[in-house]
Image 1: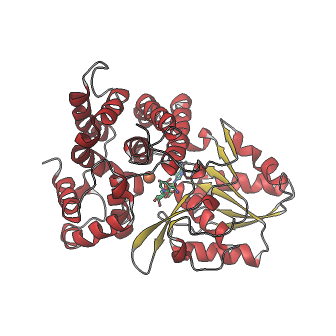
Image 2 (image 1 turned 90 degrees about the horizontal axis):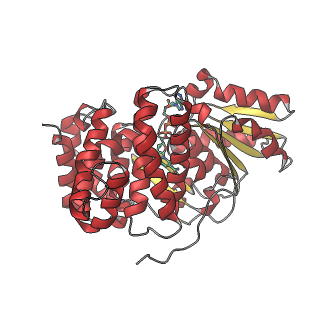
Length: 393
Ligand SMILES: NC(=O)c1ccc[n+]([C@@H]2O[C@H](COP(=O)([O-])OP(=O)(O)OC[C@H]3O[C@@H](n4cnc5c(N)ncnc54)[C@H](O)[C@@H]3O)[C@@H](O)[C@H]2O)c1
Ligand SMILES: [Fe+2]
């Protein structure tokens, strides 16, 4: 039986399709905005999308202040810099252009314009009292789905912890979901962010908080990934595959934000915070191991996922179907040339082993593992990290 569920939150406006980024001016005009902070990163400035959006705004007579200092896995310090610029230039709204990092930083800046406590006090669920400045999110990866979620993940630099903040006030005012911006993603980025999308779909669907609103979105996300991810990886200029993955990312975001992520994300955040492994990659290296640990606790749901991902013939009975998912996910990582955990840049074995207890404790503190079909103990999480480390012989 489906669980009861609370409020379902998504952006009031979501535009999807090639070229919709150009609607940014019309979206701001709805709110009579004349001065914006454009939040992005250096890569997006150099590649062009952020400059293109700034030029569109400039041509329309909107004054633009650019903050391009957001780093991958954005920090509380990035947020503080952006907030200073917002205030000193008397901005009225924010436009975020980039992957999950600039969008998450922009969300945090937005709510700090109207809420006075330090960001760290808002970590967790529904702690932000007031709505922030309007935010238009324009994603360039497919992706985190952050453009459609009420979540921001910001690294607390005093503790080396990626803090998850969830609040309805983090939902962007509008999401402009334009796959054309993802055509420039190199294959390794396409793979990592694509497996992040898949992990959102799977975790939203197997979560203890899965519900009748999120299930269709999660299943569609998984199906779109099955159809398009390998193609987008092999053929970066394939518009159909890019459009499919962009839609999957947005749907995955809406699904997990209104259900939840689970153990993969819980264990992946400490790897990101400590070793700076990109978010999608740290999910990808954990997904098969965590699925092996979890599938028996929700056989029917994992079987459905396995069938959608073509891990087994469609009429395979539930138990062997669910079990086939583990190999199917390993094969996906192989096809996408995802490195093994121990081969990820920046992950030193001695440091990894010395920090296993901290990582397990941080994972549990985030609350995500408690949504998993099989809820692990701290010792089991340590064992899962060890097993992901030795995966692949
Ligand atoms: N808020 C949410 O709902 C949510 C969900 C999942 C993940 N996240 C967070 O999002 C962050 C990761 O975001 P991400 O994976 O999108 O990557 P990212 O934003 O960190 O970007 C990674 C790199 O890719 C580059 N890049 C972005 N778009 C590109 C493009 N089109 N072409 C070429 N290069 C491009 C960027 O310049 C950057 O160097 C993590 O901090 C993660 O925790 C948030
Ligand atoms: Fe994610």
